[in-house]
Length: 113
Image 1 (tube, rainbow, N blue to C red):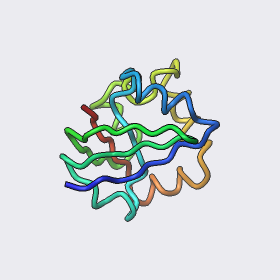
Image 2: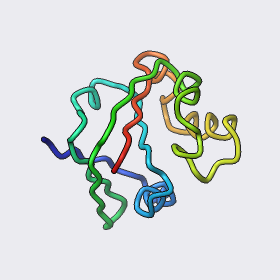
Image 3: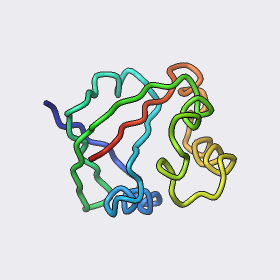
Image 4: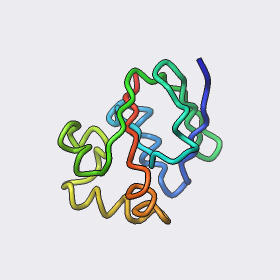
């Protein structure tokens, strides 16, 4: 089992806090080469500023698109603070290059304990 560091920008601290308080049980990342080796049983070390938090991965899903992902996983488990799928898609689009990365590699959804 391995530990992987995932960073949240300070501007995205609410996402870190949602993982911390359990309202966000699923962490997603574009399925680029960087994240492909992450496996079930590995630990994710979340870092936001000086705060750190560890969560173990219980399941890993690979979807070809956001639409495919939300057919299997309720969007509120991925982004609890958004009010619609459209708002969730806008949030993903706000990350630099994310739309292109998801088109090319798909998206991972990591279920956290």
